Image (cartoon, rainbow, N blue to C red; front, side, top):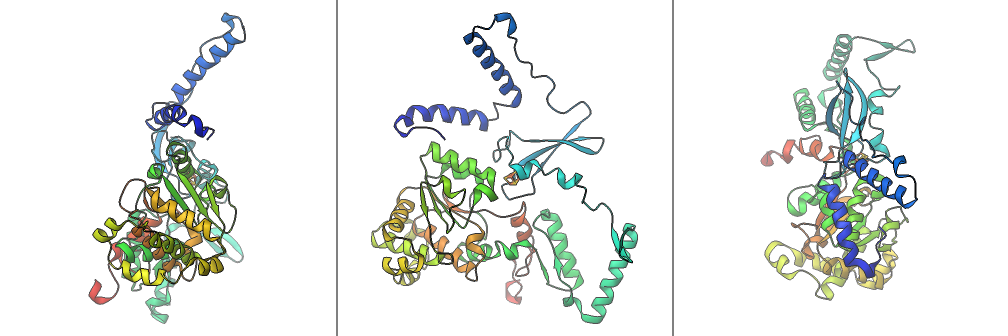
Length: 423
Ligand code: SF4
């Protein structure tokens, strides 16, 4: 990220070529080492080292050993979904590489991903059913565990009813696992089934689905590099979703994208911003309505998009009217000029995307926060194209799939409603 703006055009070509090489998978590790060998040779000549002392680098010895299988999977530690190549010998996970061919991680892992093998090899991993017997954890057989737990559950249901049980699934389940878990709860006789989305993005699902029909991120992590303006709110991706940052930083370089970070704290993500906007925690709605006040007052809204695609914007405007600059500055602490500048950039320098995370959703008004952001995206016509949209960074590898498949107390698989007429 060291390009000088004045030499942008010349340098952009080189950078794009370099990044293109990486993304197309041309520069694999072997080619990298081979090219490094040529560079080493060049340096040796420059340093007047005797020609005979320099030899071409050999790339032999890399890659899985004979008899080792490479199994592709994804890192489970966040929703970026970096591809992991596990090297397996005699059924033992012996090595790990990030995948160069993945368009998401492009040969990289963060520290969390690099340690994913620990999940399998960790000393504390429970490998067998264990039962606390007279204060000692004791290994028991699967048959004993299943029949003892089953008997106990039947006893509880007979005594207290099916709704006395609560089944907690996981955002790390596969789609199939989530669906089966939901079925298990239904056969058991209860709707008490949920997973981590309850405390992370369940408000996002409700807010986005109630605005435009389906509660999910609209674009993909690597599409963000096409954006010309990126807003972060309630997201510290540099720490929580580290590999995603390569796409944001590439967009910042290649498109000269504006990166506007709204956060009460100066985070590591904010350190990469072109504009950092500090605001009072919990005032997200006032921030968004305040931006829209400037957008509509100055005619920066996307009139064609609104007339063709949006229903009910006039109702939103009645609410937005109340958020004049003075009121918004009092509520949020953001100076009028800074909020106006951010609003103008988001509305005019397109495509623009809005990224949010727990800082938006974990509020008593989380769903309303999300609906306000979606309304801003619709008002500026920033939905449905490359480089724009709602980029909602989830916490685990399959929060979306687990919610889609019914691990959510609020709906049945594929969002069929629980209320009789909606089924
Ligand atoms: S960015 Fe997320 S998915 Fe990628 S390696 Fe790190 S924790 Fe794993």
